[in-house]
Image (cartoon, rainbow, N blue to C red; front, top):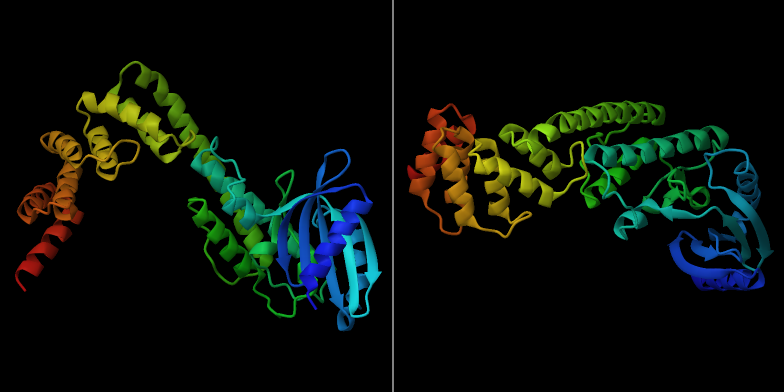
Amino acid sequence: MNVQRILDEKIKNYTQNNGQKLIEQTLWNNSTVVYTIEDKQNMEMSLIAIYLEKEKAYLKDTIEKICEDSKKTEYLVKCNQWTTEKLNEGQIIVIETEKITTLIEMALDENITLADNTEEEKKIWLCNLMENVTECVEYIIKKYPGFNIYINNEEICVNEVGQGKILLFDLINNEIKTNNEAYEIVTIFKQVANGMNIKFSIKIQEQKIENLRKECLEYIERHKRKNEKDKKIYKENIKKANNGNKESEFVIGYLYENGRGVPQNINEAVKWYRKSAKKKYTKALNNLAYLYQNGNGVEKDIRKAEELLKMSAKQGDNVACLNLGILYQTNNEINMENAKFWYKKAMNKGNEVAERMYKRIREKENL
């Protein structure tokens, strides 16, 4: 029996009978299918169809209880109405809910607009969702102690107001027994963070769900403070930068490059680095050289990077000397003698990284 085909047909019939419009299928997993639909008022919602085999018919009461409970708590996906239909082989339950989107789908489809957020705000946004999910799981454990909670990518959802939720109906059919909910949640959020290029520093470990929630709250507060500090640094430097202060021009460029205190904007970073570099400020010369070396925000130009680093190195900057050594060692036109020369320069100025790089080259030469 093709379960998905049957569920798709039931969804299609349900929407036609209720004057609704099918938008797209958003999930198929474990005898559960989810669609985004549009009602007569052009309001979007989700429609969930669940197939229960005969031996799992007893779960119908639990599903209906969850639907009723959802009207009384923020921790469950809100259910508006539901119907049940018996089949020879089992039964199908169709449920209208608030609009939900799986977190992984949002990340993969780039439906999350965070371009106007600082890097710290992105971390806070993601951790807020994770904290929402830990609350949901805590509620589920206490309210439905018989569930086997094994959370995967498709069960973590976000509703229209940006609240993290658990698609609980998928868990009802779950037969995997586990008590590593916190580990599963962090693993999934780490994957999403990596996909969105967000540096997410919460450790993946087995722990109690309440401990993870506490960790989330601490993380949020810590990064809120950091974000406010970065915004203060921006505010303190932008006026000076506009007045031509080379140190402040560099700071503003750095903030834009890294999304600190302001949304990340590599073009703005290049603009401010160039202003500071024209005044021969070594830190700006180094960072601008790095952008040219990697073609980030500018057209890749190794010769330009070399020129900028030499301007900085001539002023005695040990980081520029180190970076010149790396450039000569890793560039397509490798020049190990030049690399050693600049590593030694940096080493003599106390740069420990350069010392290690120089020693490695010498060790290889002596093999």
